[in-house]
Structure formats: C-alpha cells, structure tokens
Image (tube, rainbow, N blue to C red; front, side, top):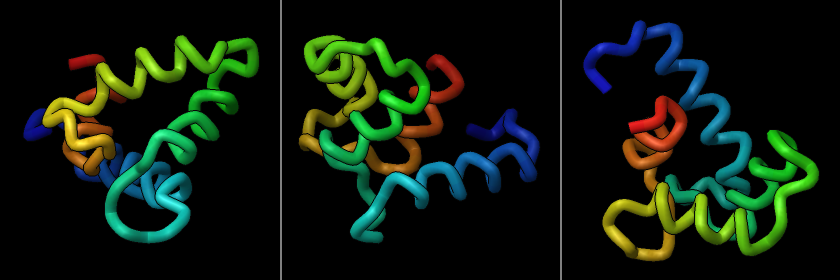
Length: 75
C-alpha cells in the first residue's frame, strides 16, 4: 500500500465505503458481489465467490480495507 499516491488511496477508500453499506469497515460477500456486478455484469456467483475468497486474505469471511486495496491493485 505504501507505493500508492495518497489521492489514489483516498479514491479507493471512497469506493470501499460505497460498498461497505453497513459502515462496519468490512465488505461482506453480498456487498462484494454488488461491486463485482458493476465491474462485470456477466460474472457468475461462483466467479464472484472465487474473487471474494482471493481478496479475503485472512479468511475471516469479510474484506477489510487493506485486503480491498491489495485486491484492487492486483497483489
């Protein structure tokens, strides 16, 4: 995360908060699927599940902001 420009990080935080609909600082599967549907409306539920699992680095069933940033930049 350290190599990102501050304005790019701010934009990602805004995007994250847009999909963190309950404001708990974590994106759950349903929220993540909303994001994925906007990025690719032909994505299957199974593909969304795979992407979610790949982004959920600590396997707690949610995506925290740091996990979101890593997923977004492709790490």
